Image 1: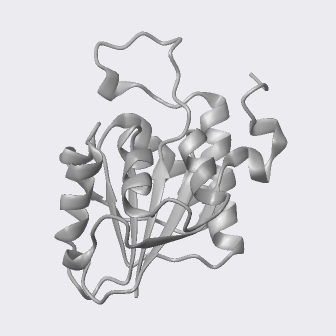
Image 2: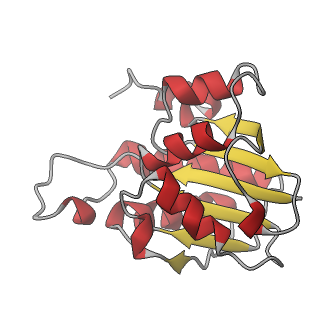
Image 3: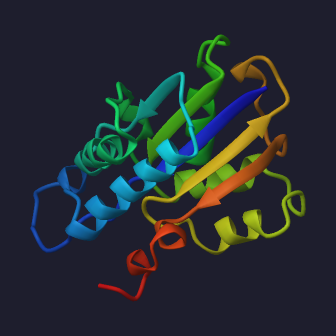
Length: 180
């Protein structure tokens, strides 16, 4: 069994003009949402053997605030190809993870993460959860997918079970879309 957890970066700020999208930082709500997801991971004893993450500033800051809520340091492998990657590229990266890794956290961006969930989870397999992802994969949301295989190289389309989809607003209504 392999468990792939996908985390979209938290909400970034558009008020502070930066030269590149890559350099956008989190806004205060994003920082709070990332810490809230970190608390959720800690409270549910969710751990990871390996972390792959985009090196974009908003992902780095998401992981910093997530670690605060989680209560422990995180040591991601920074992977530039995750930045704004397609679902196919993300799957290619996951397929190269060593087989001894059982629980992988992939931290990145939309639309790639949402498209990856929709690619990996067959329609109708997870009533409700997949539909929620298809409606929207908000910032700082977490999707957990489980695969009945022993090697990441064997992951392919329509083979996952979506076991968890958590949005910050599910944990704290104040982090919902109408609270800015």
